[in-house]
Length: 281
Image (cartoon, rainbow, N blue to C red; front, side, top):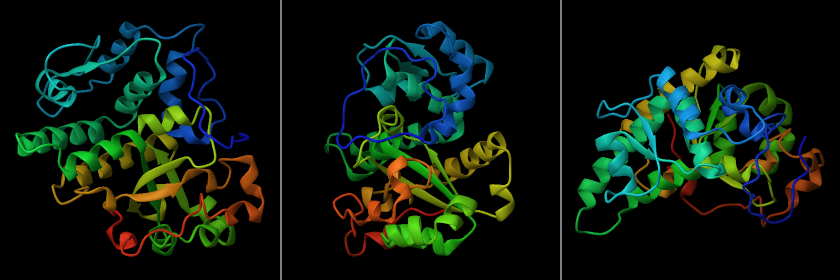
């Protein structure tokens, strides 16, 4: 279990082959991370091979292809129209973006399509609320699965100690937290007090929580893709539930003590009305 820092420390671009081992925050990417283990950074061609083998495509029908940064088109437009995803080598942020495409191919494609539609709608009017919300989820998103609606409600109500301490056993047994945002995953390499995800909450049947991780991931990808594709979903940042991820049982050594949850600078009570807006499937 990881001991967490008190402030954010940028992650150096040094390779660590064991980056996803024993890290709850990176659980959703572990299956793919195991395929790039080695003594040095995976080359872009190796990552491309994984994408090709998984037949990852964007909504326009183009296969996803990794390219060096550069070009005239805006990032999301280039992805949608040509399938070209800018990817720096020897860079954690871009590596995690590729891994998330592999772990959530449908949801990432749906998110890119929403970005494309929102960009077209915003043309000439500046960046709108929808693109801000989609970007926040793309960078810092978290998918929460639970068969107990009362646990999900505690997230909406910002009742962190009631959730993570008083209901600790239920959280462990009846909730799953799947990181989606590649910036969130990058920060998970050196977690710090204050680390926050922005969650989509999905109520599921209890049977889903008993599935093997690979099947759970596939289920989450399908459900998340359907939600993201809905133009009424994720229209503003208020529709994402802020979640202090280091409060999740097992995600930080320090949270084994009840007093950990008394820090209201991290475990904030939230704002009136935001609870009602948290995205739910």
